[in-house]
Length: 395
Picture 1 (cartoon, rainbow, N blue to C red):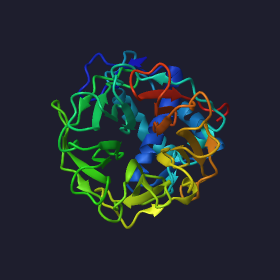
Picture 2 (picture 1 turned 180 degrees about the vertical axis):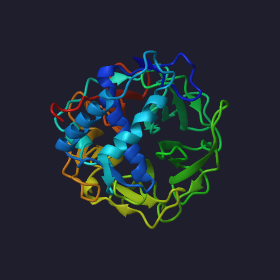
Picture 3 (picture 1 turned 60 degrees about the vertical axis):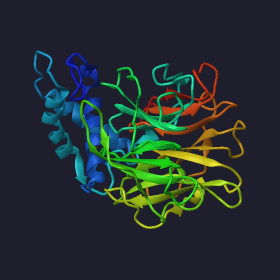
């Protein structure tokens, strides 16, 4: 059975395959996404117990339920029609009121013993002969934001955007976000809120508090001619200082009433440390930013984080001791979104090399890693690369 899951504006022929053997897994992913959305909006529902046993029990329940649903003989024109029919049953069957989401306790465990594949260059459509780096991804993984020094920009380093019509589709030619997002200065580290309304980024434009500040812009509208973004707003003195705040990453961790923006800031001692600040639904800073000590090595540069959707796994690019000598990517875990992060584990080869491997980005399902690298096979000064992993056996 093949069903069309193209975006609303996608051509009718764009399709993704949803074979019968994969339906239970797809419905589980749907329920997971629905639960994450509920937690982000304050609904706070959790499927099963957030454990391996709960995961297996939920899968069996979904399989039994789906086996009792008559499927149409002809392919449906939209997977949404089918998903909407069964999603309420899944949630009703498997959810109970809690503060955490279905992914709580699952993603880090599912990938605990998995290995990353050999990285693949995102190709000449996304990467150019210039510098291409520091990616951000929309929650549906259909929009890729990244920074580039390619021709056609407004300043030294601009934010660009590429779309794809489905998860199996190719990335389309990147488009410069233009003003007011980009300026004649450096604009980088784009990261989008889960609902797609807010874009946080770092900018060295005039009017800030220091060398570079964290800004947020609201998406006013979207259409065939592109998105319209409001003028960026500086997050203010609770976040920005006379130093250089950059490396932004947005996440709404399960169990937390507000989302967080992680970023880095240089210290008087010469290191670069990781901070985070709570933000409102409108992107306002809620109190002063705080240091995340377990992610910050006072002797080196800790550059940028990526947090998994369940808040249990974090990747950090750092020059700390124990790596291959330049920026490498490290992995941290924790048991709950309220716990401190563990000691780091070096991702090793094939992700890390003796050259720069940095600025990690995790997809919401935890399967895909996009990162910046300088390695053989690239197209320019720095390129975006992708690696995938499969869940551990018996997860």
